[in-house]
Image (cartoon, rainbow, N blue to C red; front, side):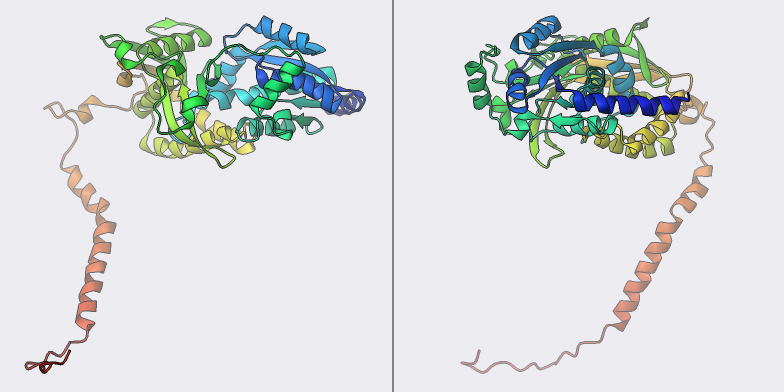
Amino acid sequence: MTESYKSILQKLSHAIDAQLSDKVVLAYSGGLDTSVSIKWIKERYGLEVVTCTVDVGQKEDLAAIGEKAKRIGAVNHYTIDAKDEFVRDYVFKSIKANSLYEGAYPLSTALARPLLAEKLVQVAEKEGAVAVAHGCTGKGNDQVRFDVTVKAMNPSLRVIAPVREWNLSRDAEIKYAQEHGIPISTKKSIFSTDQNLWGRSIESGPLEDPYTEPPEEAFEWCVTPRNAPDKAEYVEIEFEKGIPVAVDGKKTDPINLINFVNSKAGLNGFGIVDHVEDRLVGIKSREVYECPAALTLIAAHKDLEKLVLTRHELSFKSKVEEEWSWLVYSGLWLEPLRLALDQFIEATQSRVNGTVRVKLYKGTMRPVGRKSENSLYRHKLSTYDATSTFDQNAAVGFIELWGLPSRVASEQLLNSLSQAKKDRPAVAVSKNPSRPKKGEH
């Protein structure tokens, strides 16, 4: 039996199982939206709910989350550790792409969503479920990221989004939870947060006014600059083929590396993003993020690329990076264009080997040194001392040719202006212009 034939039989088998199934797999975070969704889906859709929590570094009590899901009514629960997969298959691609949506946001939440969607599909296929579900609203970007990825991976699966489909408000959800004995968080935080290894997003409360400065209590990873150390700290980050592999000369695994840089940069007050963002659904939104490691590693990687890639590579790659970031932000992780852009980006990374030294001080971070065996910098060409090997006389001919198109265009413009002046009709001027008589106007 050929592999293709086996695949066809497996898909047919799943389709038959799905028709007989009464299950839905819910992406479960333990928060209000998804906790309410467990009973809501059972009550309104008549489906048994299997919950799934994917660990991408959110640093929560995952065992307690699973127990809560079953206590509310989930017939089964999956906890999947995907931290390593998240870093290697998503975060590293993001670093290589220097991805910053609208020049600011390092896609921390956006990167995790297609991975979560993939795990939902895998669990749904294992359980023979007819649908997957999530707690996204109709205002955000995450609904797109979940829906598009799920449908791209398995078009036969239905997507259920109770909050979006029933236009549920937070007040309505709280009332429903109280009426149905659903335990909800007693935390009094006015902020809504989401975090993973790559970043932390903060929304709601006073942050909904774009003119209001975020209060200090909104942040957990970054101290205020005034509370940062009074002495600058330096961190050396080593890259191999575009991937960070060591910090301060010590090789470490990817997760520990990110956590170390995150802590070091955050304790020096660096890593806050506060900007007005264009959501995919058309809404302008004030977004606040903490991304110390993401911003530091992307800046270091981009700095190293300047040392080892040519001007032409850098120029074209910047256009690719903008498109790559837009596709990922927009939920198109499985879009063939994104996959094709990955091939170009990967081709540029073979020479991105070296070390970048960054300086952290009072809320700032900047690369202050870089070195690589593949460096295109040549001291004897760049230096101004007597050892220079650059022939300055060659510059004269270069300037002559470089400026030739502009010079020819300027000459043409001057000729056109001169001709226009010659062609302009003369205006007759009377030597004794008549003046109005007294009383005439």
